[in-house]
Amino acid sequence: MSAADATTIEDMPFEAAMAELETIVRQLESGSAPLDQAVDTYERGIALKRHCEVKLRQAQAKIEKLNISADGQVAGAAPLDTE
Image (cartoon, rainbow, N blue to C red):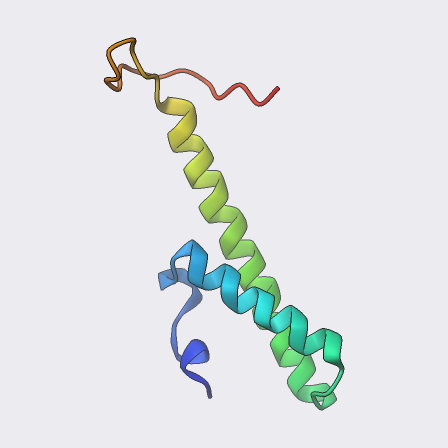
């Protein structure tokens, strides 16, 4: 078990989860891992992807709540305009 496997995904910051996910993608694309290991790696990759999506949704929700006033102070809630 690698150090990354010892860390529970739920405890990982977004950046660490994304970095591990990128490593997993490269490993799977290389095709060098035995099938059983590749399946386990793929499953961890799916869990990391879900974790990253949750972290992004949480960050977006926080951004949507922020409204900066003219003097630069956080002043209340407003939805994020994505267009």
